[in-house]
Every structure is written in structure tokens, then in C-alpha cells.
Image: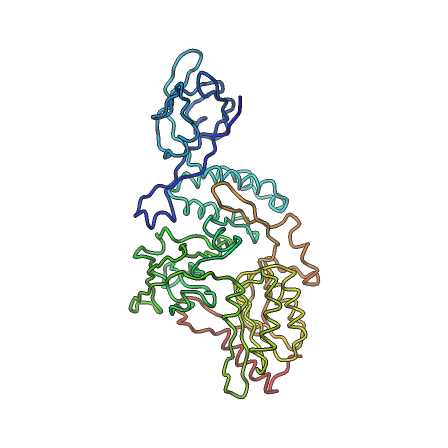
Length: 483
């Protein structure tokens, strides 16, 4: 006899057109919260799990399931688990054999994504950093996560609701990584995506969605979108309601999203550059892979190349790849060799300590004035790098105080294809040697030159870069000296 936990992967159903709804399918697959044993009489209940559909329906241990909706136990032994996997979690009737008598009970199964909620709760409640917070919410976490799933109708919105709940603990690198993001942004192999992050922010008394960052070489940047543009819709569906809107892998309070697309797919985006101005439309296609190495190469350029003080620029989208330090060094020696100063853009995602350690050595050896560009979304290893380099006389931090999100992260695979990003249990103690013992979690790295950079309707303007260019020209000309 084998014991089976009724825990099944969700399958897709569609409430919108299948073309769009495939990115945010309605909940499907039935989770009853039982452990079963196969017998000759039917499906015997070995255990009733807490707060599950079976418990709510009044099922008892040793009940034998002989009917569930249209499924019936017979000599052919139709696979009960496969049936549940392909059945929508709607109210139905379950017939059991109890004490020799048949009994019909109404039951409303949970969607199988409830399993993901329970897994998240288990990992967090057993985590040392979260237990140290001594928050009463920890004891109710599983209930809250499960209820958040029950209150949603689709997969992406369920992930979003769970992300909001776990974000309330205010620890960095605590987030749900959705299946699409896991595969297309964080996974191995070639990545096909738009290279865009979109942040929800207040403007004109309402919450709207604005481009926070774009990779160099990305389809959207090359199509003409600019940071600060408001994204209104994708394929004629308002972005707020678009099935393609998904979490971008950040903590919930950052409200950063991206757009799900497939390789060789074309999407239509409606946007505007300023409030109450004409709405524009463009189409973009995802035909080539895009990663941080490609983005760095495409970002290298010389600002004012014909002027007296040309300035070299490059942007590090993230600092994950071991190729990046060598590429930075090559750029400084080749494409940017004749520039008088350097603007190194650290805005955006983080990376790995061993990579920034090598980049730090490259920048420390440089003789030209350097401005490191940071903002409130520069995070993790990037803000550690900024803090480390701030002590050098030829390096100046320009922009906003960084995110204060430096806890090292680990990634846990969840059922249904998602991942859970959690800080390691030792916290930032494992990386403080890089910052000479300085604690940056929740604090961030402060710039030497403060330049605010509001997001909405920026119109492509970049006050942080512009300010850095002015500063570097003055410094390269000898008018300024950092002491």
C-alpha cells in the first residue's frame, strides 16, 4: 500500500483570451488536504490535515472515498490524483463509505497553489532571522498566506498577495520569484525578455506604473521608451489588469514589476511621457537573448567625445557574472581609454560579493576621477561596492541613498515552479568584512553628492547622470578636489 499526499500542480484555465490568460491562469487543480492509501474498496483517508478542504467538509480518518464529483471508484481504478489535477477547485460532492454506510458531503477544494503558501510559511517560520523579530504575525503566517490564495482568482495575483504578506517582516531579499521570472530572468541558459522594470508610484493623487529601469540593448530601450514613461497597457489591456504583469523579484514594498513575454513574441505597449499628454503606441519583439554581460557591453559610451573633457560611461545591470570585472577593465583600457573621467552606473539590482571584490580592485587602481551613480533602488552587492569605494579620493558617490537591502540571499524551489528568496540565516554578518564592519541593512549607502531623482514623467532626463557629468568635468579640469 502507498500513502499519497493529495498535492497537485495547478493547470491552466482561461478567463480572458487564451493568448493573454496563459500568463496568469485561473486557479486550477484540487487540493483536499488529506493523506490517502489505495485499497480495494476505494481511497482510504489516512490523515486529515489541518485547515484543509477535507476537514472543513467533515471528512474523517478511515473514510473511504468512492465518488468525487464525476469521478467514481471502479474496477478500472481511474487515477484519482490525475482527476484532481485536471479539475477546477469548485464546490462539488464527495461520497464516502463510513461505518458501512454511504454518505454525501459538500466540499470546496482549495487550489493547489495553497501548497505553495504552506511551503512558504514553513520556510519562514523555521528561519532564525524571522524568529528573532518576535513578531506575533509569524504564528499566523500560514493562515494568512492560505487565505490570501483563497481570496484571489488567478496565479499571478496569488503570488502578489503572498509577496505582500511576507514583505511585512521588512527583511531584504524576502520575496516570491514567480515561475516566469525564475525561468526567464534568473534561470540558466539564454534569457528572452523585454529588459524592463516597472514601478508602481504615486502621481497626481493616484497609483500608476512607470518605467524604473531598462537594460541597454533591450527591445524596449531600442524602441524608444524612456525611464519615467508611464506604462498604460499591454496588448490593449490596462497594465494593472494585464495577465502579463508579474513580480520582478523584489520585496513587495518596492512595487516593481515586469512584463511576461515569450521568445519571438511581439507585444503592443501604450504609454505616455507626461501627464495628460497624447498616448503613444509601439510594438516590440523579443528575438535575441539578453543578459547583464550583453547590457554592459551595449552601455559603454563616451559623453561629449569631441569636447575638452570627454567622460566614459558604463552601466552594470547586475554584478552576478564572473565575466563582468574583466569587461569593465577592458572597457577602461580600450573604448574609454581616452576619456578624462568615468561615470560608473550602479543603479539597479545587486549581485555577488566575489564579483564586486574584483570590480573594486579595478576601480581602486584607476587614476581618473570616477563618479559612481547610485539611487534608492541600487541594492545588495552594488551598495556594498559603493560603500567600499567611497574611501578613495578619486571616487565620488552621486545620487540618492541606496536601498539598504544587503542581506545575502538564498533561493528555494517551490511547488508550481515558483521560488522563495530568503536571506541566509546568518544575516549580514557573513558580508560585513567587505564593508569593514559597517551595517548597511535598512540604512543604505549615502552619496557624497545628493541629487534627487523623481521617477514619474522624467521624460528620459537623468538628473543623477547629468549632475555626475558636471561634477566630473569640474574635477577633471582641476576646479574640484575631493579631500
